[in-house]
Length: 148
Image (cartoon, rainbow, N blue to C red):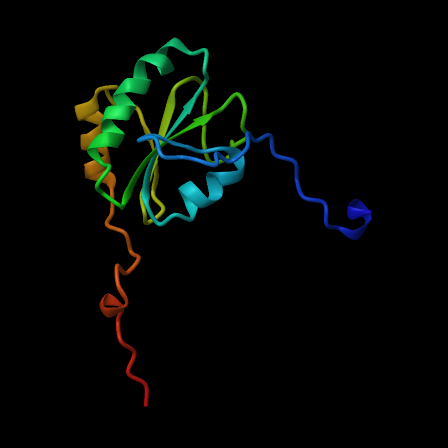
């Protein structure tokens, strides 16, 4: 038995990881949160939403526009997580209502966004809080170690 062997994994409520995730605003679920937000090395704006929430429905087209404006920027991801269908670490994300927006820079700085819900304000917030990815873009740009 897995329980007796100590191999029981914790249960997370999670929608399935989408097979196709090619919309401007990426879909994050509990099982992809770690890879897409914490381990991606990207600057990530993450919306916690509820499908029935009117404020979320009004914000959706604005976030689409924000995501489209960063489409050609490999260092920025705009994403959303249905907080009614997926667990998330409540000690990291303080979600008291919907929508709740968090921004995690590529260096790991986590900020809650509480500014205006306009395309311009959200883009400015991302630009002012982002970091260029620390990942080298090519092997040539990696530092050379000269050992004796």
